[in-house]
Length: 283
Image (tube, rainbow, N blue to C red; front, side):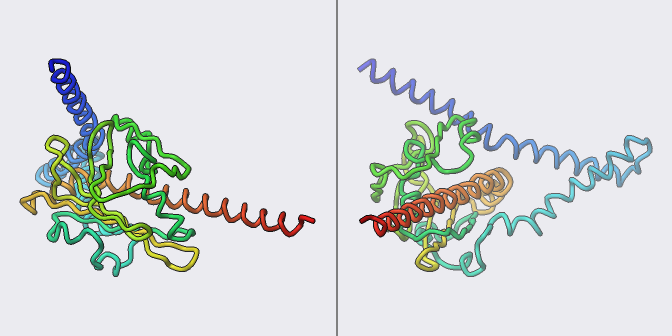
């Protein structure tokens, strides 16, 4: 009994330490950037109130003014591209699997990519995602800097192909991060985020939808929804602290899935052609 309690305490301490490390790596750059923007805004306002006098002031003030305007430029021109990278307007508006779980999200992204491989050759890469499975095909070094221990594979592993509703997806060692809420092979995979402390679902979903373009090409659409309330606070929180890191990692993940699926499909097609030539050449 004592050993069990000790093990639980140690596991809780490990999760706490891992959570802090992950938060620092994930949110640290955004917090520093916000601090820089705040300082730049104050410097720019001070420059308008009291015109720059020294040479140093005349160098700092234009830079501070530029940085103070950067968030507005991002919101107006860059943010739509970040939220909807690769997706069409129709895909952004369309209802996707998993939307019914969270009907009024505080924050949402819809991203998409074309893959030169059939649907059935793309699905296995989605099915085996997870920290203790095939990885996430993103920046492993950055995820591991946060202590998540990801090692994305470059092959399909048969024993990782079983995906069922209620199955757990881990993003860190021994941490139940997501739960599978919907799965239709060669069609869609929907995860719902779990509270790491209570293991209860929270208002955040991650959906992957694959649609055939033709016999040899697939459209992969991804949607993430976050709904922590109050909605305005949730929107500001996710936009300010997580939006850009999320985009960086997710874009790389989509590119990683495409690269692996296309490479494997092309390799198999080449092998099939060679086998056919060898069969025809055999006496």
